[in-house]
Image (cartoon, rainbow, N blue to C red):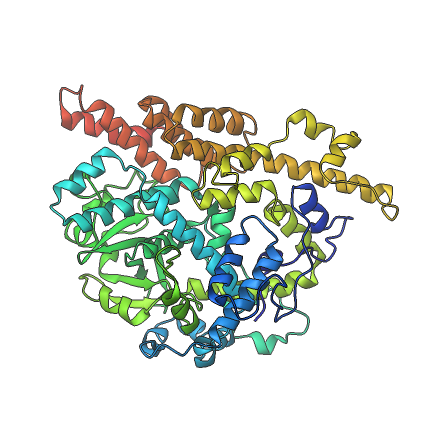
Length: 620
């Protein structure tokens, strides 16, 4: 199986030349990466320091997986894969594990018939007791998810939602789970900046096929196999977590996977379009037979009756006006209408790895300290969801499989295109290797915000990733600064190449500083230090770079800080001027703040509610 260039960047010391005299090896060095050894063979040999027959291969594999946060990415990945394969040689299959062909058959026809699907979901692929490099990234992704689910779920939730949960008369376990859902949804919205969602490519769209592929052979391939980017599938969840951004479906996937780490069943609710493919609506958490609705496009849970709490699917079916109340005039109408509610389909998130026997065995081997939910019994999830009313059907979600298809095609195209390699570097070069920024991001995701034992926390790394403007400005002329960055002009480097390297290094340092400044704001929010967070978000991010990559996220989170500080009018004004893909949700949040501020002083509650509802629409 081929793997994406972004996947491979985690295993390689350098890519082939990107053109313009710049390589990722040089970029990684100047961004703060430690030198990396060449990658091992397909079946890497164990470290010489590993005593033969004296160590548990499974435990050693986990040790190397954890080393990827601080040490050589290539070696740690190779060793992880090697020791997992040594461990699994002595394992037998789980007699309770099965391939649920009935659930797999619910995929859209075009996806189910695709050659990539037949390969990735074949009996051999799902049953085989053998690990590949993509499995290491899958395990790392879930290690991050488990950590986030543990530390972020403990964050306090809004008092009004907490009061509402307590009033519902839920069992203590369900109340805790629902509070955890609220906290993880809020983490997802605050930490993953919403990007515009691409339309699904039309089947007739020509894909960027490889020269060796004949048109006739690919005529029936679905768009992801043709390398055409589309909604939800152009990034894996680990991309979304590392980069801190994703579209509505990618946000939803992360949220659902976080719920899974808390052993909460979730599903992507969609509206059946009678075309074989349902249109994604929102993720829902299943608790006590009710599907609670969290909208990752709005960045808000769907409000329940009376505007309080979180609506369930049963609530909106019984009271369709709950959806109509999300309309803001004619310009911002909620995308799902009451007439759609008899066509709701639940989609199960299950990647090829999570459906495999090898991940079930790994999951069973993990102890409580490292426990991760890695596998999905799709049939069991379907049985749980079937107890819910108002679902027309329950199917397997195509997006996790499409993501694997797309990354295969993307990797194949990237390997042959210097132009694509250059574009990939421009977009994501700052995240490659183990720069101080990437180390900080990894510790951030793991919840290690401050120093842990001998490992610097995310805060220290982010601060180290922020060169001063004066230092950045003299990168091209000051030899001491160049030396500190690991830059040295060699005899085989001409002047043009040298200048291009210096230009790219300067660019990466500017990017690194911007990312670090924004994420420091989020860290202070997590610690409840809202005044400090305001400085990082307002001054160091928005004012420092008004048109930067974090403008939307910084403005949203700055408004959230103002909310926490009781500066509700300032928060409302920021929500009203929002121009991000989340604008509809921000206007709804502004309406909520207006209503909350007006309610105590209003002589007529009905009049106040009417004025509050109209206010955001008047600003458009």
